[in-house]
Length: 297
Image 1: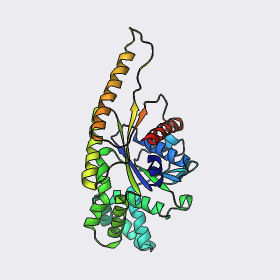
Image 2: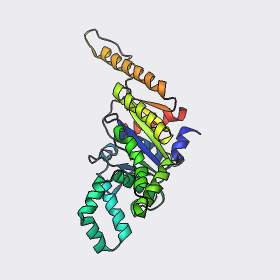
Image 3: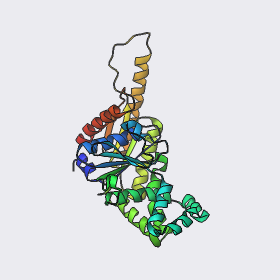
């Protein structure tokens, strides 16, 4: 199957990568790409700094669903609030809800229970694609999660199964089992890794590829190598060190891409360093680069 068609069929795409590699830009670009191809896309962001609205030139989400472009929406979500929403949904009686939410036991449990917050985020994504969203966006075709950095990527994906193993009954246990099955379904859920062609990001990317294979028996849909230095082909000035500095950075990129290719034989999209400020123009340019790369992958 053509890789672009493969992306169009997924319901959840988890985007992760080392901090500073342009993960949020790639998330926004993938959303823009799929929206222009007719999919209704919702971008999920959990980073409290809320970067996506700046890239898409919209108002901050503040927890609400914001329309960024035709077919493209974004929402900043707070995992703790999602857990509280689950309490409201299951108990329904306002007095009981208020007592539970105000309880120190509830607060300590939701803060300390391993995997619960991560499961709540994936659970919201599952509910959305199954048609249980709010009036602003009842049912997106795909949710793209701008996930935490690579170091937490595996723990996020493993969280629902961890909760299901520990909590074997009740609404939380049932929810965790459904979410775990959702994430394990390769026809519904995919993972995209973002890196730059530098030593440490490539090291983390190769480790995550191995962890996905060993722990989940799966591989990423694609690895996206972002912000690559193009070949320097301008006139040189003996008094200007810029050409040599540029060639040095390009040489590092080439070396690290070779290292990445040695362990990853799957789709690799190479996105050049673009001289553009963060914003919709950059997102659109990166989306076009990714589209061209995935079409030929």
